[in-house]
Length: 147
Image (cartoon, rainbow, N blue to C red):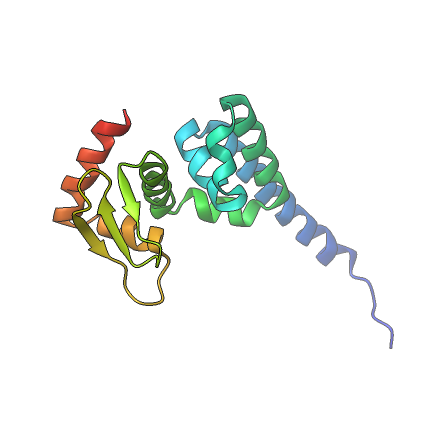
């Protein structure tokens, strides 16, 4: 089987891809370091905690260039920053995630904060919980301790 090449369609598709890449790169260039850390944590994992701000900036630009669609989706996802916040709080031992990945507790007194719903990512659940009235109070308390 043969297929006729339509140069107009090819050029249109390539132009759309290039415009998306430019949009992602511009967005990556203008975001703050905290959001860059949050986005990269999705891609790289906990290694971002040991990266300098220059490394974070470089890697977020490379990520935006390599996968612009995913980058834009993550940059527009408000829960990415909240998930990163929860991860940082666990790394700082302000809160603890139980070994079974089902319960978050205070690091100081082991008082239960929340139970993770079945079959849900614990950090995504915590990000959603931070948006509740009770969660907002806990968020503010953790924020003061992380500062």
